[in-house]
Image (cartoon, rainbow, N blue to C red; front, side):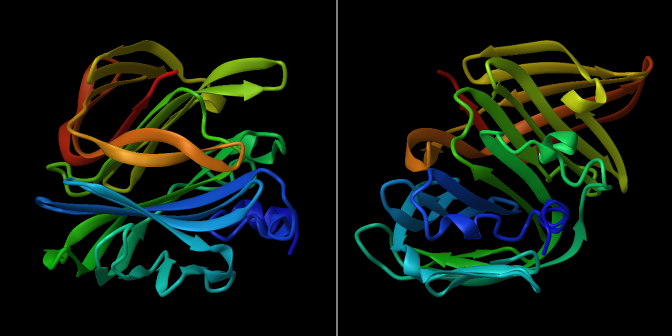
Length: 316
């Protein structure tokens, strides 16, 4: 398999070459599931610094858990794609969860299947959401969207409470590299009144050799039509204001203007990588809200609010 294969299929494990080395490296996938008041995200991954570890992070709208594993319990497959940590299996078609009770977490178990997946548009120049930046080998953090929206079926039980996800929504993405950006915001929402809408945005300070720039990736899908606003397609950030738990952003690309209002709800601790080591505490909410207004010239063509949104605000 050549390098282009990995670029075109970012879901597969990118870091096999690091498993027998002590290079600083991390790779993690993110599976977010929502249905009405039920929200749960799973983040399986590995990190490599002086030692090698696998982990699963779990976050709900009530709490979060970090469960670490010996790296020997991490397995992966290319075709069909899946990763396995212990008895837990993750793929684009669904997840199987079997986390045993320990001092790190209670019993968490169940199955959720994914169907009717909506993926972003890809081509040779833009093999994933990072576009041409996907081909730059020294990026601190690489990002890929694996599914903007999927239909869910199944349930997860945690602390003997069963969470039903029949006819809910799922979102899947991943990151890999050495470190998360020092400062960034990230948000994602699927539960708009328009059931065919899905949205994500990330704005981060990106180190680039001797320089640093503000990187933007943003996708809004409405009724199977994709609107993409990114650094590499010359989108301008007209407004970017963070005041406590409120964020107001205005983007402009050609004849389109996109206004985003993010409202942060209660968050819980996750751990992010710094030079391969899982040591930076961040807070993520998966019960926040996003309001999106899209204008074509001066005409509003979409205006809606999503609940059960994922939102992280990370400052220096």
